[in-house]
Length: 468
Image (cartoon, rainbow, N blue to C red):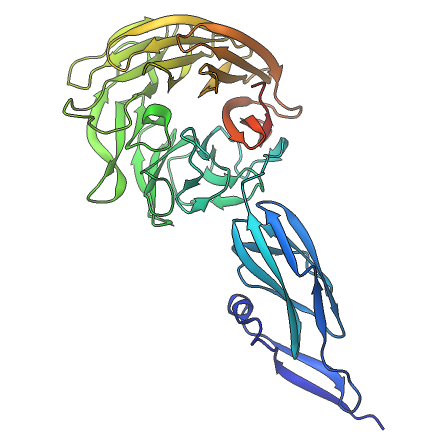
C-alpha cells in the first residue's frame, strides 16, 4: 500500500534568499508519495541571458513539481506573464541579477545581465502618451551635452514629457513611465524644463520646472530621490535651461503677466530654487519665451548675463535685457504670432537662434553674440502653424533645425551654417495617425539622429528617423 502524505510550510529559500526578500514569504503544500516519490527536481534554460535595456527573453523550467518564480531584483528584471513552466524577463536598467524557478527542496537560477544603451536604437513609430494632451518634451539623457545620466537614471534614453495633467519621465526604448509626480497643481501644463549639476547622475542634483496656465512647480532630485514640490502661481508660458544645456545653473521661467523669473542652483541648499531676480515684461506684445546663453549664474565678475525676450503680436519682437535694472530694448521685429525662442552655441561662441512664427508659417533665424549684437540671417518655411523647434550642432559644424506644423502634421528639417545661412530644407510628415503635432526635438542613439515629438490631439508621441 502506498501512503499518501501532505507537507506544508515555507518553500525552500536558502538558494534564493534575495528572491524571498523581494517576493515575501509564502506557504505552499506539496502532495507526495512518502514511499516512492522522487526527490524534487528543477532546472532552467538557458543558464545565462544577456539583454539590452528594453529587450525581452523567455526562460523555461523543467521540473517534476509545481514551479514558482522569483527575481533577485525586480527593479532590474520584470516578471511578465508567468506560467508554471515559462517566464518572460525584460531588461529595465543595466546590471546583473537572477531569475529562479523553485519547488520545495530544489531551485535553479538563470543569471541575467542587462546592458545598454550601447548598441541600442530607439524604436520608431507611434506610442500612446501616459498623459492626455501631451504638449512637448525635453530629452534628459542623452541630452545636448552628451550625458548618459540624470538623477537616478543611468544608461537610458529618458524624456520629460508634459501634458494637461502634469509631467512624466519616460524611457524612450521601453515606453516605461519612470517618474510621474502627483498633486502638482498649476495645470494644465505646457512644458517642463530640466537641468543638472556636473556631472549629471545620482551624485549630482537635478532640477525640474513644470509650467502651465495655472502656475509652475519646481522639484529636485537629490542623491537619486525626489524632493517635495514647490508650487508657484501665475500663468507660465515657457521654461528652458540656460544655454540649452543639461548641465546648467539656471532655468528661465516666463510669465506673461509679470516677466522672466529664474530658477537657480543654490549651493548651500544643494537644490534648484526660485531666485529673487525678476526681469519685467516689455510693454509691447505678450511675453511668450526667453533665452540666456550663459549656463552660470554670474560668470566671472560681470554679474548676471544678458537675456533675450520674445513677445508675440501682429508684429512679434525679440528684445534684449542687460539684467542691470534697465528696460528691455527691441533688437528684431518679426512676423505674426511668435511662439518659441530657442538657440544653440556654434563655432566662434555665437548663439544661432530660431523663432517659430505660428501665424506666418516660418522660423526666423538670427545670430546673437550673447551680449548686445543681434543679426537676422534668414527664414525657413514651416507650413501648418509651427509651435516649437529644436536645434542641434551636426558633426560637420552646421546646425540641424526641426519643427512641426500643428494644423497639418508637417515636419520640416533644415540645415544651417554656423553663420545662419540656409543650406537646405526638406518638408515631410509626422507618422500617420499623429494629430496636433506641436513639439519635436532631436535625440541621438547608436544608429544616428532621430526626431521625437508629441501629438496633442491624438494623445500620442512619435519617434522617427531624422534626415541627418
